[in-house]
Amino acid sequence: MLKTLEFQFMIFVNRPIILLSYQEETILKKGNFVDSYCVTRNTYMIEPIHLDNNKTYSRVYDKGGEVLVSQSPLKIIKESCKNMSINYHAARQFAKEFFGEEKHKLPISISYANGFPCVFFPLLSPDSSDNCWIGLHAIINFKKVKNCTEITLKDGRELTLQVHSSSFSSQYVYSTMFQIYIKNKRQEIQNDFPFY
Image 1 (cartoon, one colour):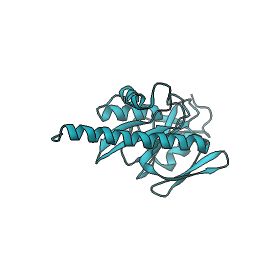
Image 2 (cartoon, one colour):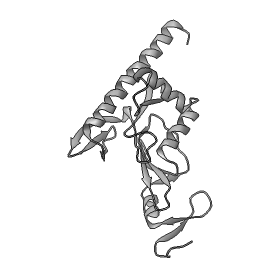
Image 3 (cartoon, helix red, strand yellow):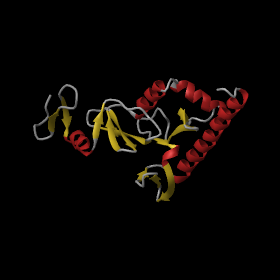
Image 4 (cartoon, one colour):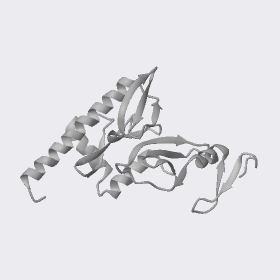
């Protein structure tokens, strides 16, 4: 039902006509809009966007710019794992084998390409609707800015995250340790099976 014509727009986006609020329409004008997205090493960060219709979308920062996706960040991560022939829960379990059962904000490896695991880590609980996922490979610097953290992505973009720098730093260190662990495990397999 239309609230007012002033605040609702009808937009055609490679699918049936949908009604969007002014806030949603403004977001769409700023970037590309897609129904799904697969995380790769070109993906830098996935953040949630909560819109008027109580649906959670995602803003994906990647090598090509920004993309608005009609899925939550967790859904994108889970679907990307599936597209890379792994299961999200299996990826979490692998991380728990390294970190132990008590760690909840686990980094996960979505794929392994060109000698490097593609590790993403959550800022909050992965199940939180406010959680962002950040690619370890995408960060070239981070610093404390008041009670937040400013990160610099490898393309030079600077983003301010609503998370304390000590929490971000811990997640970054855990993810780096996990990446080293994965590389070492991969090397062990290659040493045991040289034709792998």
